[in-house]
Each structure stands twice: as C-alpha cells, then as structure tokens.
Image (cartoon, rainbow, N blue to C red; front, side, top):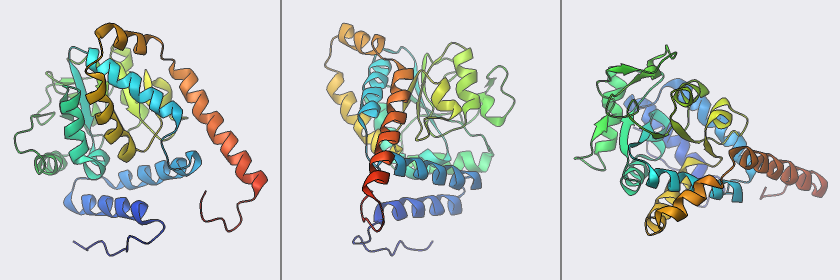
Length: 262
C-alpha cells in the first residue's frame, strides 16, 4: 500500500490523511466504493460548520452519552467508514458506554465483514463483535442492512448508527429503538429520523464522547435522566442550520476571496 507522503505543514494535512485512510480501507476490502462518496459529502458539510465541534453538537453528545449510560442493552453499530476512520476510538467508546459492538453493512459481503473484524481486532484481539452471523431481520428493511444479531441490535434499547443512510434509522425507530446518529448532514433522513443527531465529524465526535462518558459515569441516574428529558433534537438541528446560515452570511459579507481560513 502506498505510504502517506503529505508533510504535516500542508494546510489540509488531516483532511488528506483521512482520505488516505479510506483509500487504504478500500484496498483492504473494508470500504465499499460508495463509502468514498459518502465521506466526500460529509466533508462538504464539515466546511459549512467550520470544521469544528459546534455547541449544538456538544449538547447532542452529552444527551447521547447520558442515554447510553442509562440503557440496559446499548449497541454501537460499525460500518466500513467507521472501521476506516475511527477503529480504535470505536472500541474505546463502546467500552466507555458499556455497549456491545455490531458490524452492520448495506453492501454486505462475508469478505467485508471479515476485513472489518480483522481491522477492529488489531486494536483489541479479545473484543466481542456481533453481526458476524446475523440471525434476525429488521421488519420492513429488505437490504442487507436489515440483517442483525439477535444479541445485538435486535435486542438493543439504544443504538448508535453513525455514517449511514436513513433507511435503517427509520426502521429502528419504528421498532421502538432509541437511535443516536453521527451525521454531518443535518438535512439527511438519518439526521431527521434519529432521536439524537450529532452533527459533527466522527473523528472529533468519538474522542469527545469517550471523554464525556468517563466524566458522566460519576453522575447520579437522576441527573442523566434530566439531561435526556430536556434534549430536543428538532431544536438542535435547527440550531446547526442557523449556525451554518450565520457563518455563511458573515463570510459573504466579509468577503472570502483568498482567505486562508474559512
């Protein structure tokens, strides 16, 4: 595989680094080709929010962590993009939230499942991975993503489904699951159908959620319940859109010609 040769002084170093990670993941069989398109779409929205974690995303992360800490059977779902971008962070997050990990893919092949499992086990050989041999199907979801593990997503009360299309989010909500998603596009069906939507780049969101989980584990159950009860996903999505609008207005009025930082 080609080495990543971009110097750290390059202004887009990290963006190019994660693109390279995706290229490597495709070569390993972890990533479907459509995953590259999905990542590019996300990067476009990341530009709009300013490539940083905004206040509404921080509020959503706190509510999501609180809900997971209250859950009886929490599950963190893993797809190809997640395994390519944040494999180690995904394992750490699941442990911090006391959640199980399940591989779930839209473009599912046994080869991809094995490749993703191998990638995750580089960071923890003993990690339990569900979804290797799914035995149940989500109602009214005919795609390969509908195949789930009886001990994982099928049984879960709270599910984190990052970086995906909205079909499974909608189907899981219909099943009565509480769904959390990480999606840079606040207009997507996933973002609008989920109970909690974290509009942030997953490479920023997962490390921050790990920190929050370690901090919030010390809170009384009543405090966690109040955080969840006071959360309003519609208001959060509106706040993100207002942030984008105001930021673009400011840039347009101030002039963006040849500015290094946007």
